[in-house]
Image (cartoon, rainbow, N blue to C red; front, side, top):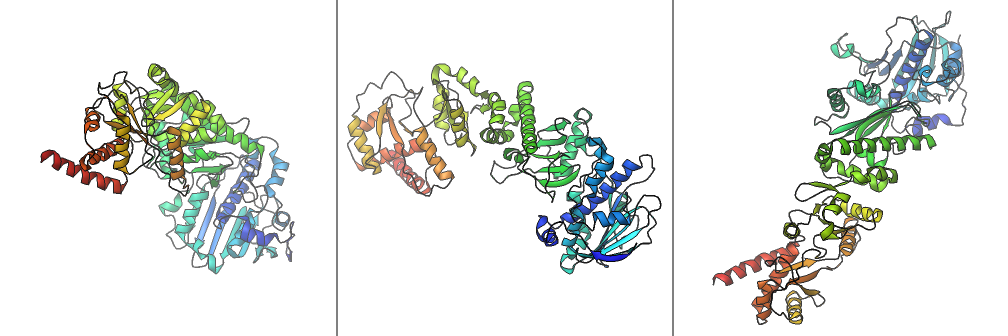
Length: 605
């Protein structure tokens, strides 16, 4: 068979679209041509199940000649099939083959993923000329060669090929010669072909034939996620994690997904040890495969946003991919898939909490961002996780919300006291510890949002930072000295230059504490949120000063005449109260240090 003709285009101007916009990355042509070779081999296996053939796909790199070759010993094509599958763009050979031979069920499909018939044409994104040399397994079929320089016009002629299979030769355009470098090709193959179903080899022209590197396939045809969880060892899980993600610090634990109904889904999700505090830019990734062919990282339609903080692989052969195999069509199936993955992760976490609580608590500093972010983003995830949310206390213990409320119910009245900085707020924490009140440590950037979320979900429970009020810290006994609240208020306002400063007198249980600075919980949260998300304006302090009636310092201050030394003492008391709840600004800290030195000289002079 020979001749010339024009390719039949099923959509007007489709070639420019394929060459420029169909695929998000040019390097994807390697994936498409290698996976086409794997599909061809899968077809031959289905038709010749007893044949003793060493199946393989080989990618050849010849930088001097400027060509890439993709060779397979699969089913091959007849001249008529080339006319049908190559000359008619968007006519999928895989889809027709399945209709004819595949029947129903995933096993009969045999892993063939082609659907739209466009993958071959991705080669024109990088090639100045494309040649197909093929011989079908059909008895009596003649080998044929197809040649095109633009994907629009072609030449068709007999071939001298004698082995069943197909070789596609790309003469790369001058601007795409980066794909002639061994390192670049190996990088792309490692990305897209690492787990394809057929052994894939890389051969480089000029290298000594039979080198150890070329003897081995670049891919693992039986990846760990295809095994039953019961057949996998801890060492295998950790080794796979290191191999795929190049992480040498082992994961905390993992979730092995293995289900055949209501969808075919397999995969492994790892909980990594966090190297830095949670941030919005941190992602796993989670690699998405379709029939062992890599599709993309972190596809949000399948992988819920909060789970992209994990690392893992998901393989679902039935994913409804669009024509570029890179993005998903909007499909109810995808939503069900996403919900299933979320449920399995929640089940793994709650199972760990119920059965291995000591380990769960040990992992908490690493897993709490996943859990908190997930609860706020996904209602179903929260419903499953709500009883496994724990609070890390300042003394190192862990309690759930309900356990905290039960342990402190006689002193806190449905309040959960917390600190946002265990070191800065150590003095305030100590006050609560003296009264036997537990304090939770909520020091993550997520926690301002998360505690508001928990209050919304549990409207009878409220979170209060240790500097928000005086619950449990006051005494029925005062210091026995009558204090002039008006005069003390005037002194502090004058000393600080704050005419609106709120000053009050309370009997605190700790006599050694002259004063506390407190700020309304909701107002402080609003300020924190404004600062965190860039409200664009500075909010004045809304803290008030509580003077301790039982403090000898305040009693002595009440009796002192208003002098510059008295005002300096007032400023010192105020700064100490502020420092017990948050760091002073740089300028205020400088004044505090200078004043401290002066007060020391006064005492010693």
